[in-house]
Length: 345
Image 1 (cartoon, rainbow, N blue to C red):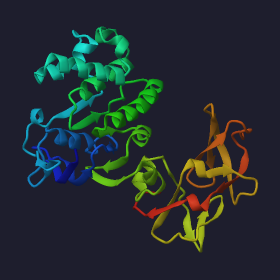
Image 2: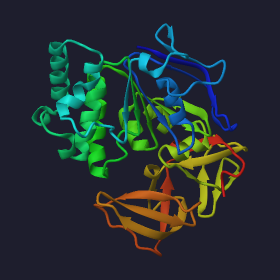
Image 3: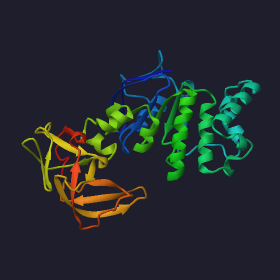
Image 4: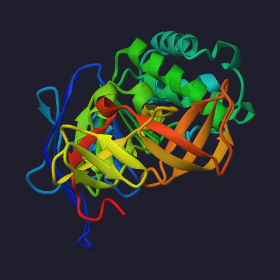
């Protein structure tokens, strides 16, 4: 199904404006992530889509050609997965998955067939008879997903579905979740504050700030072409170079960086992968720290700009704190964005 939000906003009784008017269209089978810091409005928007919150007057929620704005949650045929799993501890894996189908009063043969299908797709066949309390966190999350898939919902909503897992397991299930969503072909909206999770799973990412959807795009375009300093920093942790516009470039404490396109009223941002040690580089800085992270060192510099960080391959010798080094920044990779007062220290 397609999802369309029109002029969707939310003001709570105490006057808090949690969500400013949002327009959003999601195509059939598309996966869209709502990404942003705590309190930005992403969960409020998800709850409006689910029917757990009512939008302000004038806001509308459409499923295909159906205006479901006033329709209660139990009549929207929406699947939901939460970080708490919300499984029934006194039931087996099979019983948990089949619970929603049983509530729909489907024939037993159809319930069994659907449960068998999702058990296989979610790699849970060997655990069907087990109590969910005997499962690991990752296995419980698979059960929660399988239970959501089994009723074949029109739309699947996921609220921080992987945040309760440890880092290694979260990375594994992140890839599995992306594969499962595409295998089932379900239109999905998921909320997260984890940029890696969002970029890895979603077809499009909607970045939210203070109740506003500030940019929505494909993960690659969002990373490479942010439209604001907030998006550049939040998605990929871009660093502000600071300095001042000087002729055809940027005058930095460590030297001159040529940026022919730079104009007054813009700030320059760069990502760590576009900063490198280079004996012929135009900028000079002092190494503040060099932290070993397995595949690379994270190098922090002072004197170039606002203490930029960059990655240095672990196969090469890393500089030591206090070393004076020369640095190059790829001018084509520098992002020139509208200046926001107070954005640069």
